[in-house]
Length: 232
Image 1 (cartoon, rainbow, N blue to C red):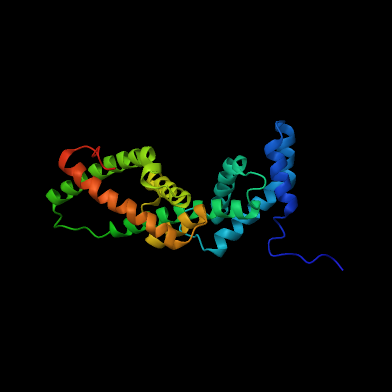
Image 2 (image 1 turned 180 degrees about the vertical axis):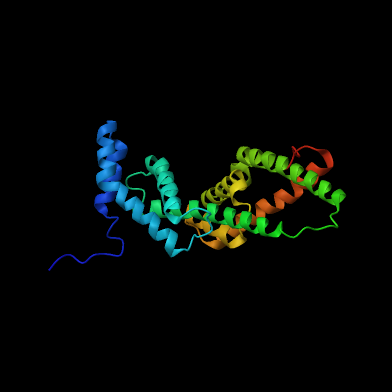
């Protein structure tokens, strides 16, 4: 009898071995051969399955084009996979899914805005809109300072290894916030859990500390125009 095929038979240990060899090979011709013969199809199939399994359909281009875009992104990240640091299938599945979550939510928000613009509001309060714009600019500047401050003081605010890892993941989300501003709370927690591998209660504890610091620092920033230097 033949060997029973698994659900992910297209992405096998042979695929993982090929990725490891690809990263170790410096010859461009050999790397191209390894990719075409052993990696290209698994990447294509992995991406195709994730798109249709999780229904990432908020794109204004065909799903095949989306698939090519995600595969290209996987190629950009392939060098980061490290032998012995987990299975390649799980690693690249998470990368592809996170990328699609960001793009899918961004496109959904954009499509929603276009639909809303069809209705014209004749009673716009321009004064309020200008004030809101100023607030958004102020918040944007503050977040940049907040991330810089936390980068420098992370090991002072948190001493536990898990807490530091969670806080670092939260800061990374701040850094790429232009792409994830449309995420709901659940989606953000999923991203942090997948990045750290920690439980929700560990994440919530750290986020509550960072949220408290954020509110206090932002209030001070609004009043003084600068970060408070004696927060710790």
